[in-house]
Image 1: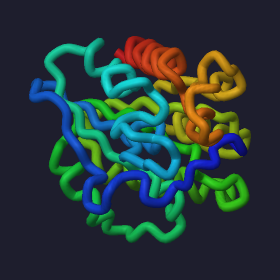
Image 2: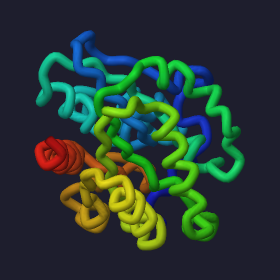
Image 3: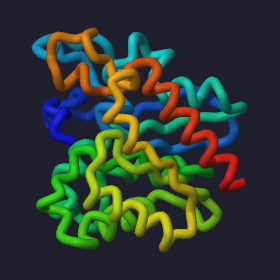
Image 4: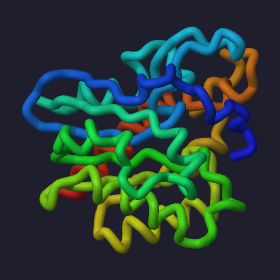
Length: 217
């Protein structure tokens, strides 16, 4: 987790945390952070607006999922601020109203990397995470969670416990961040950017989420 030196603040322009992709009938909501989407950050040597450190938008895990699914519309929520400030999130979740109105058939919870292990306070993160998920989903909405790309034992265990309590599928990712071939090593001068999943890592994330989807059907 220490490899992720990319600041969790300002990862996307203000008021642009929610974006949409496609116009199909099945509605998929993805909660994520810089691995899901990071806006242009020239100071970091990052000049794209997609999942950090994919070589292009089409090769980040969100677009790979989109290409692998059929008749879908994605709502993509860049929620690094939620990860960082989960202890101070208003109970109204007012900033996520548009997400609730989206009415997803499926939610992919791809969060955790910006949650400080020291601030997890056993159960506090997942209590707020669950409240957010409950706010945004319908009674019949399916749910898939993932562990962190960079192993974070405390946070990962919290997410596993939440998945178990919800009876939902879980995609384990935390072995990937320890494998150089899954990262963008040598492709970016900023070590934090280079520690993010490269094209191979993005593909592996997408494939593991897709396998979790198959189990949940």
